[in-house]
Image (cartoon, rainbow, N blue to C red; front, side):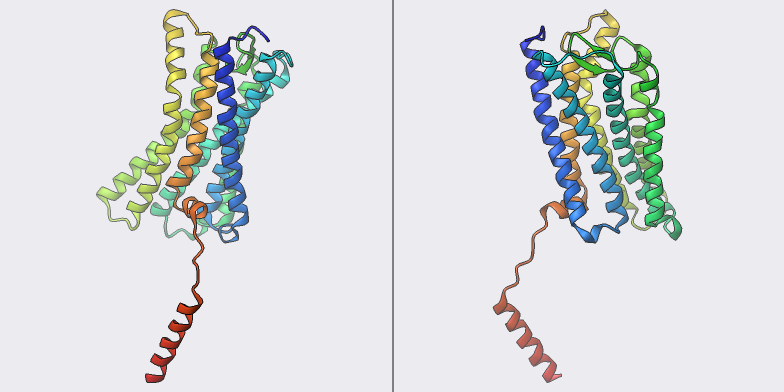
Length: 303
């Protein structure tokens, strides 16, 4: 066994299990949407499918990361600061950014539905598909510095992780902006905009859309809450120049928990996904059907 402590190995194993569960949940949701034919041409379902797919990639990136760390912990392989290591870290950043972009698109669609309800050309599958493509291109381009600048993502030999080093202040600050910061600000702005429309103008269905955006905001804030342990350790490092030996383990574990909670919240807070997961087939009672048909027939004869 390598020099990794027992607590560090346990934290990584927990992250492995949780990220695996999160990946399986996301895969299950993707399969449900694919099998449900009625939702294939639905605009909301299209945006929801994009978010779930990006969430699957986000969870998968953590899962693959923990696998590599487990192998390094038990000397089954040796990590290094190679292009492969940086590509894994870049894949994590892109999937995270695209996942939050997916929630932004869902929130934006709710606002557009209220403000531009009469513009039929922007309420089409083609328009929504183009916005999804643009959001992915935006995520890829905005996170390019992580693969271009060697110091932004590197192998941390003390913890066998390939992540953004806490000792690089520029990389840490930049990680907040394209991956989470822009998206959080956008969702909050959308929510406040709908609040204004609801209270100061008479807009039809504004309350329903406001509720939907509020639920999206709760989901995005979930990951923000999971970032608190990581943020505290980083602030301690900035103030004392001391970095806990299990900082990156706590970071990956908390983010893995966040992705799992986001996937579960998607099921319970999104009406379409909730109906898809918990739908119940109506059982038809043959005797009741015959009685109903007889009563209806008698009523028709009398009239």
